[in-house]
Length: 103
Length: 325
Image 1 (cartoon, each protein chain N blue to C red):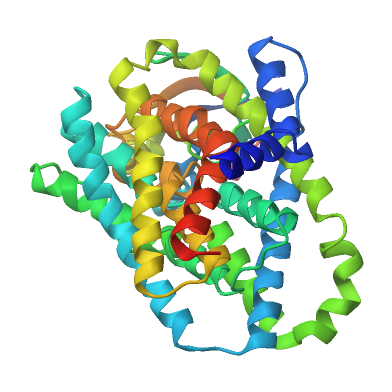
Image 2 (cartoon, rainbow over the protein chains, first blue to last red):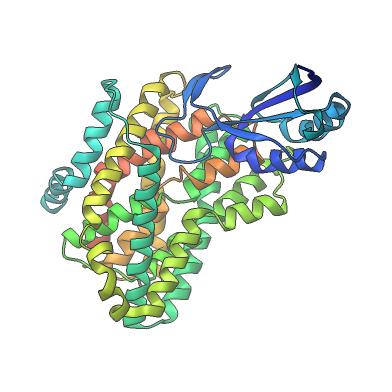
């Protein structure tokens, strides 16, 4: 089956920053993305868990989107303004999609 | 002294505190007891709505007077001033840098609504009443402390700023909207309106608070378990001393405006408690350099349990002694 090259960008960031990150992604012209809860993990400050958090402050979310390769630089520039000072990870992965017109 | 000891004993033996202790013990013992996140959220909405509504109904019954305005103003001044005291104390007692000290002090100017709700329950058990408008005072005290802390940080040359989005998030955070909204509904519908829904919002209130405090005990216990790397003797001493200083500041403010014993007690609780919901979220956005492990451990793992177990009877005994109630 015919597939098309695309980029998957996954941004794991603190939950209080989620709305700002969504705005930055949309500002870069990306309208399709998914937001996933992060259950827990471990980082430079040690292990943490979403379990029993009473507020947004201690939680993380992952925002994931798939875009055409030519849109990557614009998206990363926009996202960087939000994630620059904050805890989080940004990864870019090559992937293939079936319906290129959707991205 | 006897009065205080009997108050303390009755507080420690109440279902509310015992539920909290169960949660702490379960978390410290690494039990797999987990409170579903959605259930905790639903319970907190229920409690905030119920307490806001009760306050509004009480104001509708007794009418609005000048004390409402002076109490809100006193609360705002306390909330803005306590971070300055906390910041000064932290600089003397700990080695925290300016950013972390300011972030911690923001938590001690703002309030813990759960401690406030537990305080209203203690008042009821003691057969005492308070002014309904203290709910509005609680809502007004959430935000000013954040601005004081950001001012402290900016004085050190750091670039902590509050943009329009953050302003909106601080002023319209869920607990403020619920408290103020339910308070307004209570004022509009009055006692007759409340009678229609009191079987849901009044009778089961203490039971729901027990379950919520069980969850808070689990959260505080987990915080304590993780606190070994963060807590120094100076920070621990601060977490226990600061609520007492806040309580005394609240007492002075309340006395100055002539609050009766029950409301004076609640003003002390508001000034003594530390935020762990609204302020941490604001600090993560405005001051990401500050370590959440420090401020969450202090407010949730040290000050909250202290206030709930020993603080409440201490504040009630002081409120009674100085107001003659």
